[in-house]
Each structure stands twice: as structure tokens, then as C-alpha cells.
Image (cartoon, rainbow, N blue to C red; front, top):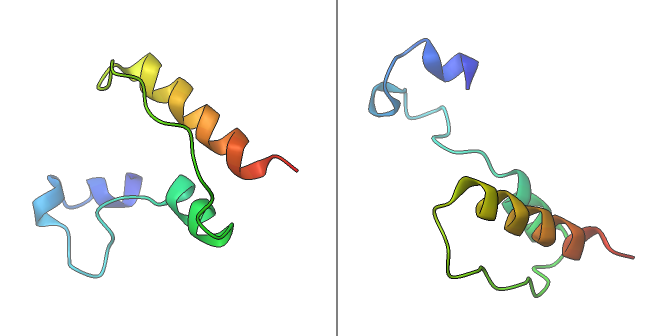
Length: 63
């Protein structure tokens, strides 16, 4: 994100720089795309989204 700020707004980024990060998505791909918990209805709430991402991470890293 710090690197991206050098160009200002996201549309101003050179095409070579990704416009999003893939931490959980990358892990999901690496783990063979396991089934993940469904999101709650209260989407777009930062705390709800963070809890959902934690649940997704736990589902992908459970052994």
C-alpha cells in the first residue's frame, strides 16, 4: 500500500502493480480452495468483515 501511495489514487497505478492484495485468496488457492464459512448478512461492517476473515483463515489453516 505504501508503494501504491506514490501514484496517488488507485486508477493512477501502473498496470504492473496489482490493485489488490491476495493474502486470504492466495492461501485459499494454495490450500486447494476448501469450503469456507458463509458471510453474515451484515456485510460492509468492518468488525463483521474482520471476524468473517478470521473464520475463513481458521478454516483454511485447521489441521
